[in-house]
Image 1 (cartoon, rainbow, N blue to C red):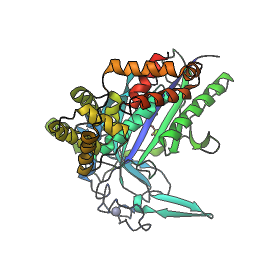
Image 2: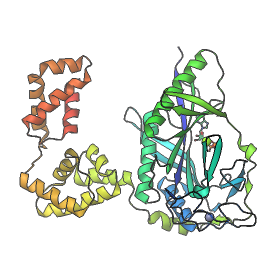
Image 3: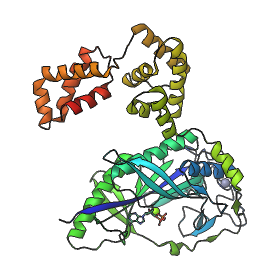
Length: 441
Ligand code: ADP
Ligand code: MG
Ligand code: ZN
């Protein structure tokens, strides 16, 4: 069989949590509200109603772009994407096409080998969400509460080569939206939506394949990865059989664990994009953009690096502690308070991670520091002592060690348990797991 390379590009949509909609004053807080109660002539597309731009949404979009190393276009503009479907009453969606707000960014992610790779970001642009259609009993119900909620779309170049990169990227984006406070980015509620474009080519080929399959309406990271993996296999098998693949949109059937055709793809020129004459062009000076870049909060990946450097905690601990901004902030506060009681940052980090404590409040900090001080949970940090414990446990559990070496990966837990027991739980389980893996190679 030929060797193939996977080519994936991602489109991520995120609904912003601004107060009002993108082009009118209706509230975006529609979740659970009665259908069509968050509407007005503008977002219902009534004749003569004029849109006006939500400044907060534009600022949120720029923050996202800047955090993703984009340039802000000094001139950007809205266009009408024309199509006939009742999810938008106007007959078109206001979006950005030729003049997006943010362009040419990049983000570093990890591939399946744990190496860092750079994903180029083509654009982060501003648009509006559509209304929601519900089909039941041969009828279609329309709810325009979501119509015109601010939506940002972040589009990458087709730079992903494996699903580990896709997952890392999507998680980083979700984390970023939450750190910036621009969206809850909840996948189940549809605040954040992923679309993966997938194709395969013979290894060593430079050009992009002439087709791409767009995977849509998949509302979890896990399903997205499963769908991509299924799709890559399906495409390779088809090519090996000499079949020609076509541009199409597919969904994911979680019961059958298969992708299925939804529709054959339309081209951009079917939409007859043209500049929206009702909306002004957006212009920014470099001073304004510079100020905004300066005002960005510390980004999750910056915080992660600083935690490892400043507090000398493990990369894994730092990852867990910086997952959410609130727990990262509280961790730093705990360090400040802990230093007076002579508790080292590493002890606090280990304690929080090992006990799986979720930091939500000042009280959490107080009780953690007290536990550490009282129980004198002196975590064993000394590397040579850890290695000694690990080797002792391996000798004492020879059967499990052999089982692990012959491929029964679960056997590692027996030895891990033995180390935990020997040390009275005063070791970091992840660290021990790593040491065990290294020692059993
Ligand atoms: P559309 O709105 O039609 O989906 P976009 O330009 O917004 O078009 O998005 C196209 C996406 O498809 C981008 O993420 C891009 O990187 C990706 N892409 C383009 N060509 C390929 C390909 N051959 N294989 C996989 N992904 C591709
Ligand atoms: Mg697309
Ligand atoms: Zn409205």
